[in-house]
Image 1 (tube, one colour):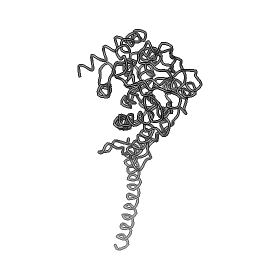
Image 2 (cartoon, rainbow, N blue to C red):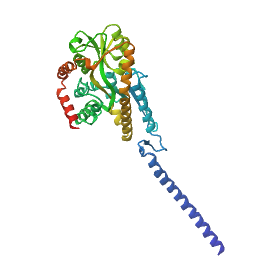
Image 3 (cartoon, rainbow, N blue to C red):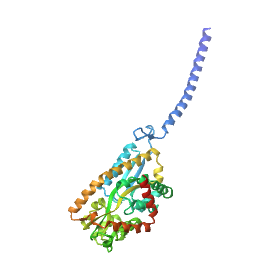
Image 4 (tube, rainbow, N blue to C red):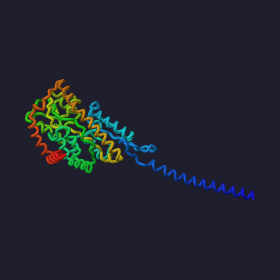
Length: 364
């Protein structure tokens, strides 16, 4: 009896051991399956607006190359770097923005064509540049249309601008992240004196290639000669042109006071640069990363705007001390310049776009 009991006990123990082993194998498979699911889950925005990824799986990283014609010492370029720092911080290093100054990455036209093909590029453009694709955008920077930052900062809210932005993305693969990277008013810098369009009749001014800028020079009454931005100083110095029209910041940083005797305070454009980006590259980002890139871009643009007015006053004073004579706005025949601008609207075919723009502004 004792032998039988011992035998049955041994058999029971063996059966229990086999059952336990089989259960252990099945449980192991179930454990692997359940732990794999969270590791592949998508990263999400954190509660403070930053970026939170799953720590067990490294997130895919992205690099954006930002191109601008600004010099590295320019305050606007410094804000590009702060934008890059903010994005890196908010995304926990998932997105890196490398900033390139002085037109290092090529011409605006080449950069935009690369962006249209999906290149990881962003560019500080202007309404004239994007108007090469959607002509209505020229209304934003057409001479004597918008006056001051209050109007410019409202641009992104306007139904007509949102419609043009959608066309830019759908048909040309480009997105505008922000319009608020302002450069303030643009004026004329020249070796020849003038206070009205008639007095600029025999003056040549450097122009960018975009039709908007060519027509802007004609609004002033001068003759445009298209020259790359990086060559404008030498072109004025050697007499290829008599001057240029520029923002105060660009004139100061380019040391135009060395080659131009006069600054004519025409205020012909209140300049708002936009930040463009490849739609294909941008839309490839998770939505929370898209939001961070756009929000931090706008925040940096606001800082640029806040600094510009005071900086412009300081720069004009310094250029005057260095020998540049400033012909003030109230010394000019401003109405004649504004009247001259009407023909540029017709040439560019943006009369209707300007009316829509101003109408949407009035309706806010």
